[in-house]
Amino acid sequence: MNKNIGIGWQLHDRTGWGVYGINLALQLLSHPDYSPTLLFPLGRLPEHPLQKERLRPAIESYNNLASALKHTPGFRPLSENLTILYGLGNDFIHNESPLMSPTEAGVIFFENTLFSQQSRERAARFPLIITGSHWNEEILKNKGFSSQIETVIQGIDPTIFHPAPKSGLFKNRFVVFSGGKLEYRKGQDIVIAAFRAFQKRHPEALLLAAWHNSWPESMARISTKGYVSGIPETNGNQQQAVAKWLLKNGLTKESFLVLPETPNIYMAPIIREADVALFPNRGEGGTNLVAMETLACGIPVILAANSGQLDFADHNICLPLKKQGKVKPATTMSGVEGWGESDLEEIIEALEDIYTNTQESRQRSLRAVEHMQNFTWEKQVDKLLQVVNNFFS
Image 1 (spheres, rainbow, N blue to C red):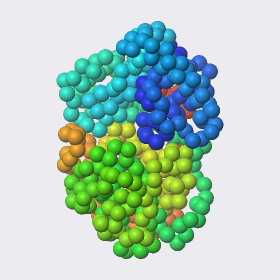
Image 2 (image 1 turned 120 degrees about the horizontal axis):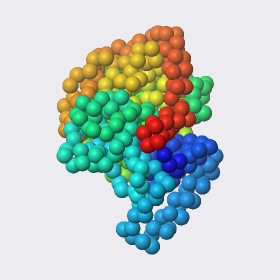
Image 3 (image 1 turned 180 degrees about the vertical axis):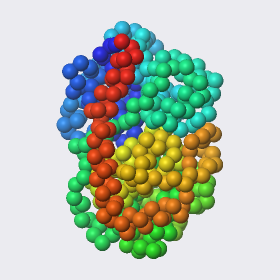
Image 4 (image 1 turned 180 degrees about the horizontal axis):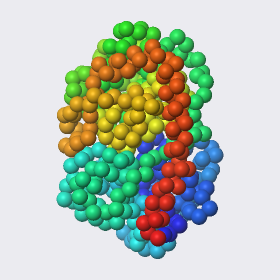
């Protein structure tokens, strides 16, 4: 196997794929036997100055590559000494690398479980497909995809996401954290309905919402289930628009705080202010990276036991939402096999459990922190390299 690894998706510190790419590149740069080749234009780079400096050689190499290829539009040189990992989404859609390689593998996270004939043709290109969850692996195998399919879960950075004292900014408040881009699939409408009921019982409750969505058109179906009405305005400041929308949906001004778009490195101290995190997400191709990072911070987590989240929906480390009903397809994704509609009463009961049984919740969270040490980026990238190396050697 070639020791030069091409990263076939954009590095960006405010998207799930981008955070994966950044941490993959950092681990490759620290590995004695491997090095990264960036293949796509860079998004926002980490605001962590040491990470940014460590990435500099890979960034300079990409800039040189882009400059050289600029003079030969349409030409895709063959690089014999490169193994390209392509980032694949729903229906195996991906962007073509500016370089060609005889050694290619696909890394996929998908939520849509219906596949077109074109997707099967795209998949056939990759002799090895690496999925981001065991649910994704099971779906592909059950649907007869012929490639070798292996699961390698994402990682967490324990230097950032770890237990630490609260700042005390929200004294005497019971803080409920909810993270993920605002859309039907992520289930923030369920969060609003559950929090609305919980806050009536506990007026000191505060919803801490990290819901920035860089693709506002995907918010259009958030009201499908009927828990909320309307959608936030898509023009102007999104943070203010979401706040206005929450007011229209029955929350009081003092009961919530909507966060602006926030770099990954700053999320840990925000998460640590919470007393509980709620993830009733209807479908996740991966394992829900924000939930993983929250577990690593030692915050009690309520997690929907469906789709890719099943890899961490374990009662030893969180409160899994076991009552999972059928989901009405309400997005551009018509395949929702394995998705789940969380039960509102079960969520409220779980919130009450954590509110009341603080000692039991703390013990569960300590087990979660210990468990997440098995999923550092260093360990997960090593597993990824081992899978790729074993296949192509």
